[in-house]
Length: 232
Image 1 (cartoon, rainbow, N blue to C red):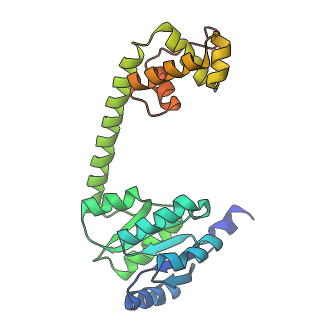
Image 2: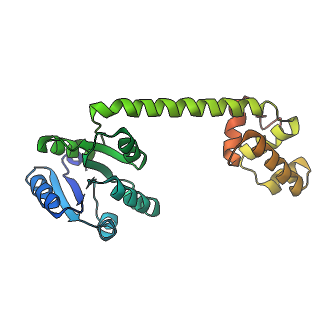
Image 3: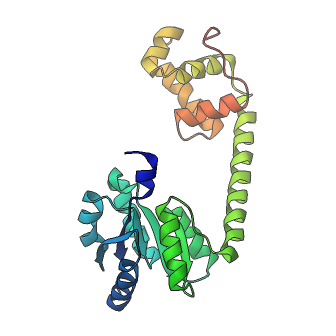
């Protein structure tokens, strides 16, 4: 199938909302649109799971962040749901609610005063893999990302400084961790006991405040202190 043919494929949509009247009205509206197929509707996220998991649904249309939370749990449990683009509609212009929806994986957020034309345009945009964000809420998203990046940079800088305080032996050990070696392999290479290697790892991760071996390696690399393979 060529690219042009792919672009012509209809958007397959599933509507999940508890209110029966809203469900019927929105489904009727969308079924009249060219290029949009309403593959199913439901009031219950659990009942909808089987169809979402077995059919090629592009867009999931919801009117509740709580329902999105339930869907997010399903996504964690089933990889086949990860390609579904979530669009919320009928939402309040609440920055906290909006950011929560983004954290849960929504890529579209329509306010409760959005028109039918806006909803159809949003469905098409989300179906193309685009994001839909109310202008009045974009600033809160930018602020959140800015704060998060700043905090992450500060944490990485602190860990980088801590990495500079590691002993030569500890940096040598972490160079082998970075190569993917196990504690047993490291012990053999450095002629140490596996117990000693484990103690080193505990001290290193505590010193760097790292939650995993990988996070410790990232912090050391950021500090420019990780030995090369030849030095290890």
